[in-house]
Length: 426
Image (cartoon, rainbow, N blue to C red):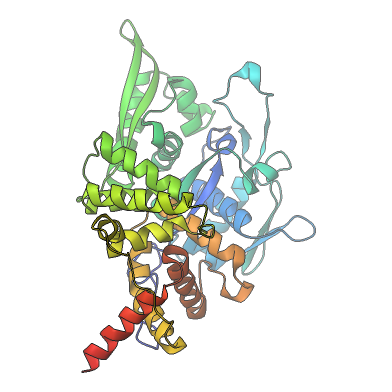
């Protein structure tokens, strides 16, 4: 099961990840995603492979090319609730011996044939697992150029190995809403392994009834996708298949028209994350959004002013405070003011932390992961966010997120805030 964090810090502040699934996505290379195991993979083995790949991306190997992962942490990563550690170890050992054929979806005349085990060396000690990655795949896994974003929060929900395999196959094609068409026998071998067990499904109707239908039902009920099987036939015989793929929308999301999609594209170009851009267009009158976009673009193009370092933050301020509407009315957007004392600025920052937390949780997992990666690149090692982050790291991330999202507050905004503080005290 996904881990949840404490609801409050000692200071009474809501934790960044309170009552939410901690973002737990990683980039999985398509060459690995579109592979064919020579033996059946159990559900646990598929989850282990994902956990080891994710760990390798997030952590450096030692000087000899070994990655080290605590067995307790590994069990949590894959949602292994059982106390049967022996089974966990046996599954890890068996995974070491399974040979994969890589990148089977690419045309055979455009790729070399490659096969190997994924994890050729595994050592299991009392509390840790040490492993190495195939030399063919090490660079692809750690620094993939073409990839699908795999959310471990979704991976942990599956109870069938075939469901997980089919979901991962479909994730790669989420943005274009349909998968590549593949011969059904090849797809069977990708899901079940190229073994005698797969060969028991010599007829498509049995493979569909026993494997495809239950797996599709689980993907549609447990994952972030809705998929639909599409069969291609010659006469009455099914020759190949593909899937229609649609991302599930939250209840309040609406279908966007052409003008809304254009505004979303403009916002992404300014620097907003896609899920934030969709939410802004969904929740704000479109004329206000477009006015704030134009106001921001004029400021970006103003050669007399300093270069605008954070256009996205400038847009958020313009939209929140109605700068564009004020400008249209012939008024100055905001009066100049002397910057108030630092304690007012700190109080203003504290007031923004809850908004930053809400903003973060409204983003899609890949966008959340992107923000965390950007934060970790500039943070000191003790303050970087990990699977088990300190409260200090979470607080530092929230403070960074305020600045990254809205930029430095202007003197006028701080003055307005100070006046509101005084009014509340009186």
